[in-house]
Length: 459
Image (cartoon, one colour):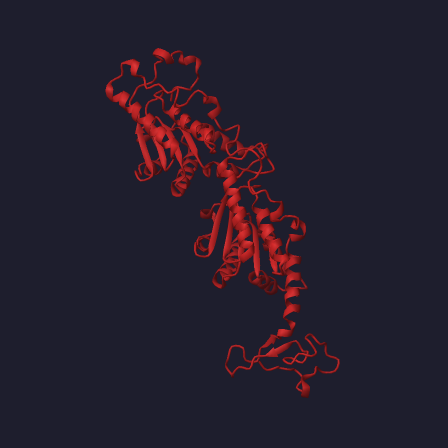
């Protein structure tokens, strides 16, 4: 490099009265702080001033200070790896605690290397922001210029830059784009205007092309994110994705299955041990065989739930009993489950539109469709309004694409269901179909007095 001095006097000393930005003893710039690249005419850098190496430490410090001023780390500096509980609070399901510990280990490993991207997914209050802030605080502690900011605040900062006399929009935008470490918290919570979507894409795409470190937290499903951004976040060679299954730590008594929705506790007697194969009723052999086959299939599924299980048959034949027995088995084994009656589920979602509701419909729906293990009882008994059809399709389609374990019971004929739902349950690679041909339980023999047992035996 040649020192491109604005003043060409011998010795390269700055002009009298000029401010010395660099090291006065620097052999490259003579204290100016800038140099010109010694490149031929026509080169992209010909005639351009570059920061001199003697200013590198000063420039990095200024970058760190500007990024920290934009960041929200001052309020989050207490969030570190040392005060994060990797297994969560007492009482979490093993799957929830394991997902939390995996996210903790991945975040701590990422902080050490800052290689690639890290995507932290999970519901509100599960620990995403704590881990993201821990990464940012660790990086700042070792001298890495870091910008930690929620996406809505970042977009507001860019909008404000249009009227900011101290920094142009272009300068602010480039600072964000080029931050050595960028942490975007609450991705997906922004107002998705065309301008916001375009600016987000430009930032994500720039960092994708240049492989700059990025941490993203979101409670939004990837399929609900702009397709251009989603394609970058789904690049498995660059992005490490981890989903935290733990519930909101601020509500320690909450569970994945909301108390007002889950129905399993109403079916405490519906276990595999109490299921009656009805051999004393004198049923035709084929009907008894259908019960035996459904019983064995349900037991096998409870031990190793893969794909979907559809239990169909007339009302009172034992579908609900077997579905509840599966859910009881999973709960007794220490795994989270959600057992819901479809009409109750739809009422639960509608209730979110009430002015008194403290939870949005989207949040309720997201928790249900992402349940690690879901039992949908009485499909087909709901009133099929267009809204209901769409919500059920969204639920089925998400779990179908994600291949999440799901048990469904229905007494409806195929022609009574939405064709879009039928196409999912007819996929033999994903769904196992059990048809119970036995009639409604009559209460013969040792399992009599059904009227005292509520809906435990039937459906």
